[in-house]
Length: 160
Image (cartoon, rainbow, N blue to C red; front, side, top):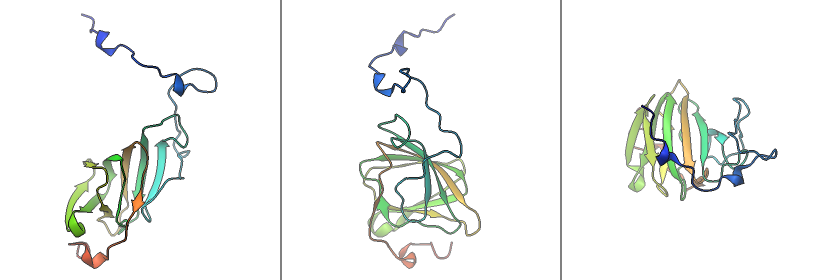
């Protein structure tokens, strides 16, 4: 029995994604050729594999974020962007809430959604191993840095 493909009809026009050759095709960013010209939150190394900077994408940022051992970001938010993350390796913590008094911890294999305009602080819980995330945002990699908070004010951060 053949599957019913009628519900997957092409609707809309994807002509805006035409390459210089005139065809519409997938665009591959080869490993090591990612775009490193991204906004940051103080010390996070972000590289984009899919973004407006080097692909035809107009409503998506998808990249890899690496944090050194003991790293924590400055407090920030991502404006109107919805953010999804996946922990590739390491252990992470995200502080949020009034005065950043709440947090969630994650480890390899965990997924996270960060709502638009939500102030937060991203942390690598390990003092010895790097943390690597895959991150996606719509519409773009928006990073709005806020006045920072002292380490001592982040509950359970100094004695982790």
